[in-house]
Amino acid sequence: MRRLASLVLGVVIAGAAGSTASPAQTVDKRVLSLAGARAVAAAAEAEAKKNNAGGAIAVVDDGGNLLFLERLDNTFSAAANIAIAKARSAANFRKPTSAFEDAIKNGRLSLVANPELLPLQGGVPVVVDGQVVGAVGVAGAASAQQDEDIAKIAAGAIK
Image (cartoon, rainbow, N blue to C red; front, top):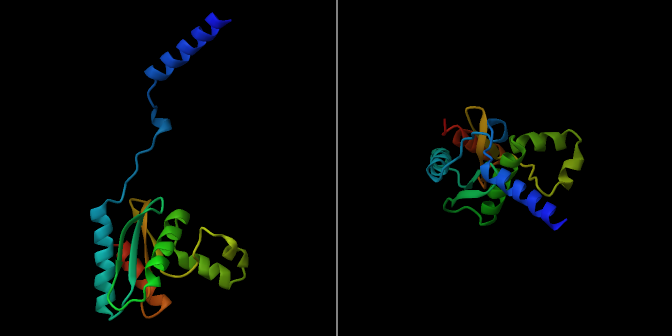
């Protein structure tokens, strides 16, 4: 019995060592770099300043991990955490957070029970060649609509 177990283990180890991933098992994907995140944030900052708006700007990767955060002068401190939550929501759900706010306004109240979602305008996915590579969240501008507008422009900074 011990000899059979050793033989089976040897075959499994040999098979694992010689295996390579087939194309069906892996996927090529674009990744948002730190330089790309800075470009997104710079576009948001430029748009905010053009409109005399403050705000916090968060840029995350496609998994919602923070890559870059900036809080413009005279922006309330909580805006930073709100911007991060908006960006994470947009990245993780692969859609603008305004879609969730609209759904709640239209009666889908159960969405507020999801702890992974901040359903407020201002979170927008960053899409390159049809792939979500990250997201930007903006909070603390003059209005929710201004948060959204700044985030949309910033998300378009990467092509």
